[in-house]
Image (tube, rainbow, N blue to C red; front, side, top):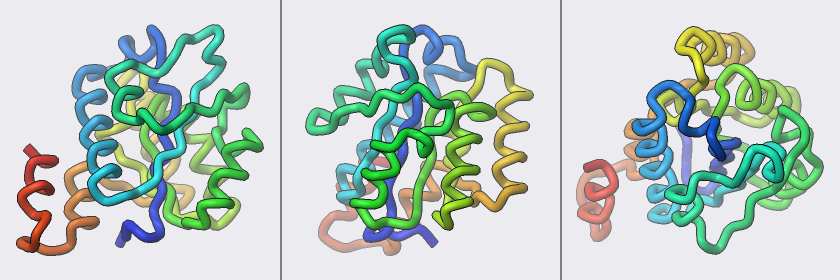
Length: 179
């Protein structure tokens, strides 16, 4: 199970026109926003990357606005982990459960997952918070990561794993994340 003390979310390349072109863009943005609000609620850090931002544009403002105290890391590699600043950030956080979300599932998210798995991270792919421009590419990316050993989840299941129990002082606030 994923726990809040050992987890970090890696947000990959939800930027520019590509973020609007992927399958289910509106739902993708809603799910990533829900996940980011969950990170705030449970105090889970987010590492945020952008592929060639000078060419592809910035992260969608609705998502960037949810991370006011965070700065994206620019990358030129498809794998986020191949960017030295990302590797350094993950090492400094000392959290071994990396939760992946973003685009495109079969390229940058996939290559990131493979690199993380090779370094013995526990990779959790949030399938409803990832997408590609073609449905088949999204499904293939999920299957490829699963074959390499990534765990598959969805935003709601992940948030309930973090919550662990019904009731308690912050349960009402938690429920507002789900609705």
